[in-house]
Length: 137
Image (cartoon, rainbow, N blue to C red):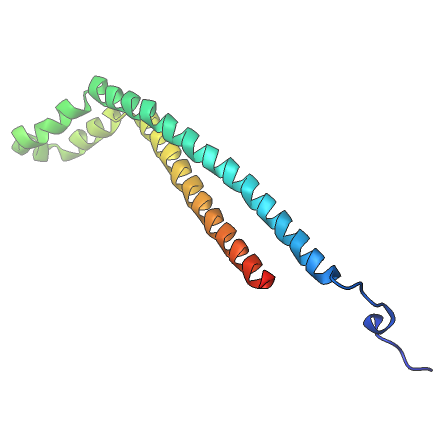
């Protein structure tokens, strides 16, 4: 059989095509990062705004549940508390407003997660701009 030519030997690319392709890829990456930043940034702002009323609701739930009154017994009458420690522990756990605690912890974790991803995308955007300016020189 004859000599096989590589595909690059047969096809000549137009001058500047490689730079145009790299520029287009860079534009698409920046666009995708901007969309991610907008999504995660708005998610962070929304969850931060939601944390405020949840914190107020959680504080009210703690006040109305009697948890602080039971917890203050630990400092005022500790001898009685230690004699029936398991009962005291179960009363404390039952008086905790668990749904409010779960809601605020979930919202705070979404806030942290979305803030980390937003700042990570900001760093990626800077890297892409730096690479673009290096290639332009």
